[in-house]
Image (cartoon, rainbow, N blue to C red; front, side):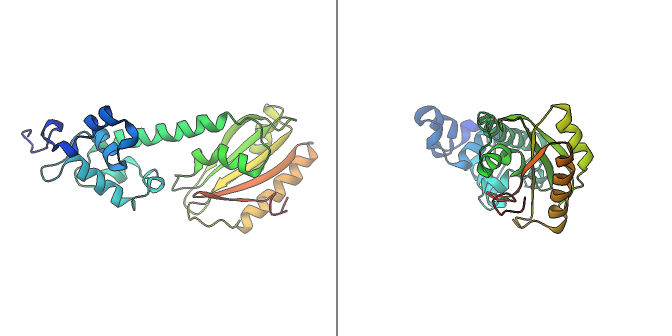
Length: 231
């Protein structure tokens, strides 16, 4: 045990040595808490790294999606988690998000609302604040670019129609798809959502640019204006 009372990996009981378990049986054999224990490296005076990892998960309701919403500051509120450990966990979660994003990027042609959801879910699913994104498409409905337009608070974000149209003109996009998240989990569009959708549709039409859909992401679900015949 180190001078500050923290248990080193070598001092863990055999069943609490996830690194050895990973090498012997592979990553799939490890529980979520064991994977987190590898990230944080050591526990505290009174608990092993695995026990500390279990407490971290418990604080997130044992939900990895909820854990993905935690910031460095959130992790540091947990006793035994300092800045370095918090940064390690946040970095690992971000890598997971980027892997999802990389997989979504392979789906370059948009053919349905589900394609939009899968493309932008990695960007919006774990946020505790609202963000507004757009997909800019060519005539074949292939993605030219995905771009974050604005970021707001828990209750909403300000969206500038001129900024969206400027983005479309810059890349010679033929059509646009809007997407934003509802951190509250409420799937239904607000009156402001409906108004900005109609305003952008009308403005884009003047410039011969089509608004194909507006997707609202709330957790693992989504709402499509096009599917609901609101566009």
